[in-house]
Amino acid sequence: MGWFGRKRDPQDVNETLRRYNEAESSRLAALAAGESGASSYAPVVVSAAVSLGSGAEFSVEDVFTITGRGLVATGHVTDGILREGDAILVLREGSSIGESEIDGIEMFRKRAKEVSSGTMAGLLLRGKVDVARGDVIRVVASA
Image (cartoon, rainbow, N blue to C red):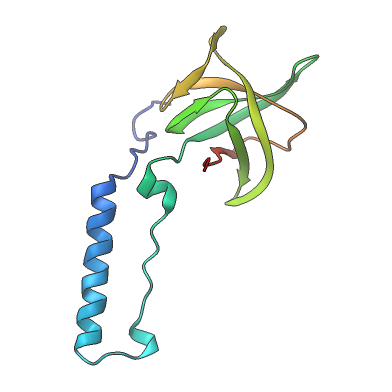
C-alpha cells in the first residue's frame, strides 16, 4: 500500500475566492435579467476553515490506552499543524462526538511539540473521549 494519492492538498484561498466571485456574478446577472424567483437563488457557502487556512486535521488509524497516562490516538496529520495544548473535536461521520485537548505528541519514540501535514504521530488526549479508527480529530479554531 503506497502513499500516492492519499495526501489532500489544502484548497488555495485564491481559488476559493475566485469560485465565490464567479458564483456571485452569475447570481447577480440572473437577478438583473429578471429571474428574481426564489428558485433561481442558490446561496454560496464558503467554509471558514478553508478560507482562513486553519483546518488542522488528524486521521485516526488506531487507539489504545497507556496505564497511568491516558488515551493515545495514532494516525497521520492530513492537513495543517497540531500542537501540544490545542483544543480538539473528535468527529465521526461528520458530526462531533467529543472534545478534548492534546497533552502530548510522539513520533517514532521521540517527543514533539508539534506535527505538520503528512506526518505519522501519536496524540495523547486528555480525559475520556470516545475515539475509534476512522475518526477525524480537528483543532478547534481559537478566537
